[in-house]
Amino acid sequence: MANTSPAYDEVLTEVAERIRSRASIGKADIGSLLFWKRLRADTPWVRKLMTVQEAEVRAVTEKAVYAVNDTSLSVPEAASAGRRALSPLPGFEKGDALASALLLAAAPQRMAVYDRRAQAGLENLGLSLSAASGRYGRYMELVEDLRSTAKIHGHIWSARDVDVALYWLGGPELDPVQNLPST
Image (cartoon, rainbow, N blue to C red; front, side, top):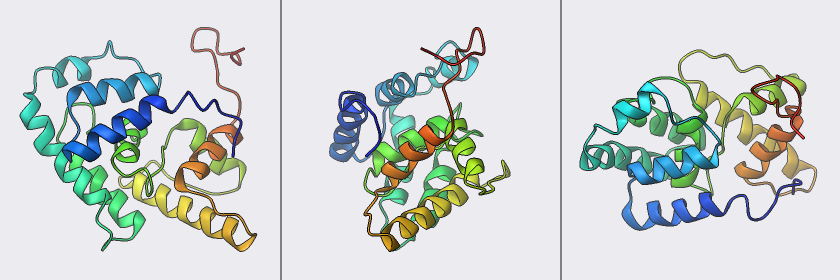
């Protein structure tokens, strides 16, 4: 769909397979998704997460994995429930970028990634999404609306297709050092 390298999502695919087999997300999976999202790992929340026992991390994430795969819930409801389930973990109290990556890996056919470029893409489409609590569920409602619009026009898009489109629509990635577009 979008101009992305097929190799880029290999990490996501591998983590999703591990989550499917274990029905939970471990610290190594979180680290892999942190790498995939190209986020910083030298932060206080990462140090704090590393002090949490693996069994406790898996107990928390098991609830999130179950929630996003619960087909009795609408996609936005499942997204909200999954996001809430992650909130007890260090680093997941607020902010949706990494949390959404975990939820996408847990339910690749239902969920999508949220980040600042997706936010900018929504704004470029004239769609509003506030940073208030519950943002990820509201984001997934917008993603589902965009999927429905695409379907009306004869296109079958996954939630992942929508998030990639929003990412590219969100503008050039900025170099964090110089605040200029990356090359």
